[in-house]
Length: 558
Image (cartoon, rainbow, N blue to C red; front, side, top):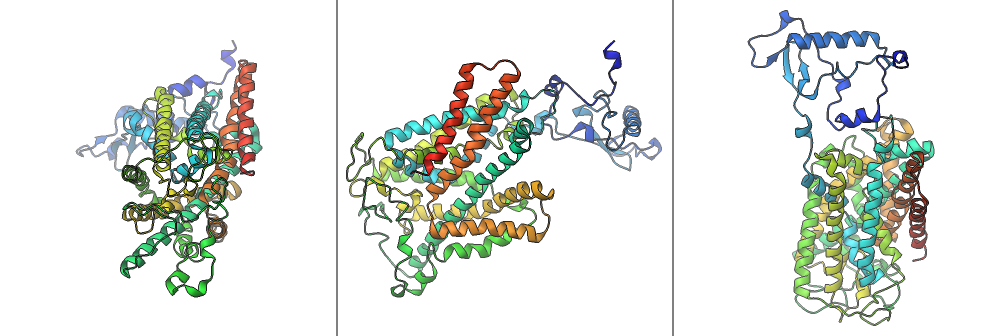
């Protein structure tokens, strides 16, 4: 009797219904309505399929339900058995011809190998340039262990994020991302917190990009100027004399300390009266960061960034070229390693250093993909392999970071140089006259110029959409937002161009919420509602939250 009192056309569905339906299809069946044309208007001799009697009946049923249903009342929406199946969807033209819509599961999904490399390509970013520096800050042995440990930890938190929408009962979460899950569990606080910390990761990446673009543009211009004028200059007093030159651009007079930050930009602030006009107007920190404004600020103000999305493949090519570059340099330089577990020496760093939180901060951003992993995995053809494919992708990312970090650290020539000379951007350890490094810098410069407007577009869409309900409220709104973002990049490139520190602070801040706190809380709340929360799980996930807090706090003492 209870079933008789329920409405026949209820819009609510059970969680099993949504699992059975293909929620990741590119077509929403409830929004596709066949356009029925009287059969007298059908062109029978055309090459395309005509409207069938069955389709006409189906169309009549949909029209019937649409008359019952008001513009805002979803209680009388057409039931599932009236909606066409994926292989029965047609678009009917006013001329009476019917175009069959392709794109069921097999055409809109990616195999596992494509999904794995999509995740790998998305995670691979500027952090790879700081990996040798991070290992140097932590010590070689401890650094390798931390890369593996943080990678596993980030994988587990990403797994929690991936399965979080499926644990919400009686709600359609097919198009949800993790910020939507946070809003479901924590209301407005979760919504705005996830937005704010997501903005930190995006704006932090844009600041790092500005610093690197200034660096690459300066070195590219320096190489061209020296080549045109046949100038052969020494980049630094501290350098190797072999065919493969390695330099120490900012010598650390205290090898046991952490003077990289304080000496990072002092070379451009000396007496300008003794330099030639080119050096006066082509300075890494005083002029080049401002030149980029002329190019990039107008690009940020474009209404659409779809044109730049065509160049995303350059990221994969850049990473592959960096791997080749690292391999060639390591083969030519050889390995230079000595293991001093706790003692400080002139040329080598100890295997365990107290500066290791700098590496954990970098790795938090290097392994960060939690805010978009659900969307990436929706396109996976075999959904039951999501966890396996995610694990394989993290394995490849970790191996890539270890490969670049370990080889550059091991191949860095000590002596005559000491390991503390390794820079936050390891390309700075090679002279501007190096041909292979010049190609890498030029390629990365072009790739970042195309990616930077995409990042700005993401910031604009999320920020303006939340504040004004419109992705482009006005040119003035967009211009003010872009000036603030560009201004942050220019200031950091001028006064504090240390990408290692920018990355570690950005990673620790955004990771606190989106990697450690929210996933752990969501997991514990879900288990508690299901009556499955045990004290061991509560303690372990509480420690996960404390680890995220400690990671952020430690950055301010390094």
